[in-house]
Image (cartoon, rainbow, N blue to C red):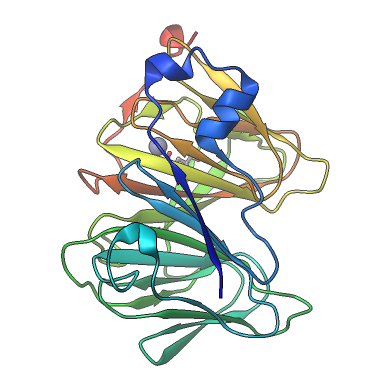
Length: 280
Ligand SMILES: O=C[C@H](O)[C@@H](O)CC(=O)C(=O)O
Ligand SMILES: [Zn+2]
């Protein structure tokens, strides 16, 4: 079975501010993540976060040996979180099956062996979004349902940013070594995420935008607060955010997104808020 892995080297702020649109996309945007019947991974050198899309068709897809990690098994020295944003499907971990419905997740601790992925109905395949970061100890594998997520309500209709942050992999919900993962959902008519913007040099972040109509676009803002740039994203595109970059978006229609972080600490609230006057 083929596992496609593309490697993204780190892009620094001085390089990023000189890039044109295609250059920014090459450095930061992950297109075409979910391909039917395939395992498609991007190995980012930002905290060595691996971002993947797995779409099982009729059979089972397996992540076991990934040469880029330099270990026998993918999870030998890594942890993973898998969020299903498609039809129901099963993730098998060390002989145990976790049936994940829409917007359910499983956190998998270090050293748990191969990961198997299957769709319940190949006509309505599961879309497994995979996040993996280096780990130093084994935390318990946990099936995370929507109810288990810790909810943080933010923003207002007046600011067009009324939304709920659902924390899935977070110290109050499920132990992990580095990974923090959650899903942000909007009130109807609210289109802005993560504005006022922030940076957190202690952690990288990656956003996956989903739940969008075909013609909807996200204007995703990135860059140093004093040198902002944007990339235009469609449904199921992801964008990497180095610690020095803001990560904020406005949609032309309905959307949701999954955010994930890895790095030096796991303090969700450790953010440097960017005053509006500093944005350029
Ligand atoms: O560091 C935290 C992340 O950027 C996201 O959780 C922010 C977010 O979901 C939002 O404001 O809507
Ligand atoms: Zn952030």
